[in-house]
Length: 237
Image (tube, rainbow, N blue to C red):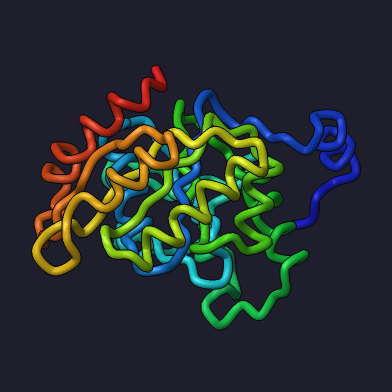
């Protein structure tokens, strides 16, 4: 996928801020393993009429969570997202030849995210961008080139995750992106409860809710039940 000269000019004209649909929210975390993708999928289910962009180019896994595979179909030069369980999915995993390791450095990763987005057909009102963990070049590219409603930061209740979540919040603010709120994931006896709510208060960020550590989180109806109150707090409509 190569960006045309016209696309480059349009991006420059827009100050490199792409607005692919009505509402765009990025889901980020300071570290991996906190359940960011689970949260992104849960938000999509609760919102309805949503596309998820898997912005983790080197290790895409949204398609694995949702059990969808194959290659992109193309319509009038546009990549058609895969549709599964009411969610549209855009992922590099649907590009031919992406099965093996993707050994790309920062600039190539950043370019791939932008081109994947610009060349995809998005017909939904909402776009959830599932960012790679941390504050890598790929993450910073999304924060700087997509016109976001804001970001949702995901953290577990433990000290290490909270420290990294704080860094993610500060990064978003430094990039001029609104922090819509903080979600505590995997709350319970093992990792504790309430740490993210305390951090949200400390950072003056809206606390969106605490998600318990339970295997039921992967049940579609349970996801809608858990994430609907979170979506209402976002006030995106």
